[in-house]
Length: 313
Ligand SMILES: C[S@@+](CC[C@H](N)C(=O)[O-])C[C@H]1O[C@@H](n2cnc3c(N)ncnc32)[C@H](O)[C@@H]1O
Image (cartoon, rainbow, N blue to C red; front, side, top):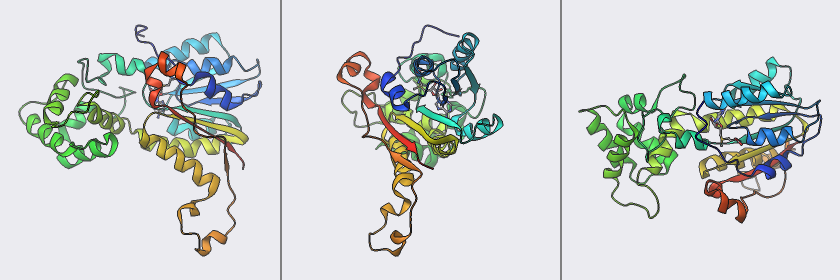
């Protein structure tokens, strides 16, 4: 495990407070990372408490296993939180969990270590998988995806205006030589970007799109939220921290759907509104953001939004 790269936990106390831990309760940390939230939560549990951690990343799992070796209340599994339902069912915990935390996206070590292939700033192998032992790497996908598909990923997941030009440039270049390194891909994307945004690397958006696609981040989030709702006991808390608008929209819509009913978006005079809707979630408080002090200490907290809900039935 490489200890050179650290992760500073975002909204640490806020997220643990939002779980309203019960000393002897059962909790799930769907995104263990380097265990910042998990350790703080364990600090609030008594010897009867339990915490199950998930992460896809082998380095996160190594840290989790070290924690599990010293704290018998903690267990970690290398699995997507999208598969939380299967894991909890196998452990007889469906509907019996007091709180689920998801602190989404990538950790700082993943972004900072060039060998993981996420970075357009520091050259490394073009991989980008949180779990490099499964699925298709960014290099493999870029080598074979259709131009339209590359453009869609950059536009939809990266919100990149020049997605089409970038995709065209990639497809032209790969006919001569495949992309194997992050710096090589970043250079071609940068060259195809005609209008650089102030303070933003011209490859930022395309790289974000690629990362979200390679890791199926939005698909996992949708499945993970459904699974979390089933995992929770009545009165249990769901706490989700998002780092970009696409994630936050999914979280917001999921919580609203279960708190206010799917009919919420329909015109008010439709008869369907008359049908009794029984909410499964109650929204707790407003979305929370990092404090000024946290923003100063950790610029990565800038884009964090935390939403909290409680299971009603
Ligand atoms: C922002 S970090 C979490 C940091 C953690 N809360 C801490 O305090 O150290 C996100 C972590 O979630 C993991 N991750 C992202 N999506 C995942 C998924 N679908 N299933 C499991 N782990 C995931 C990443 O590998 C990364 O380690």
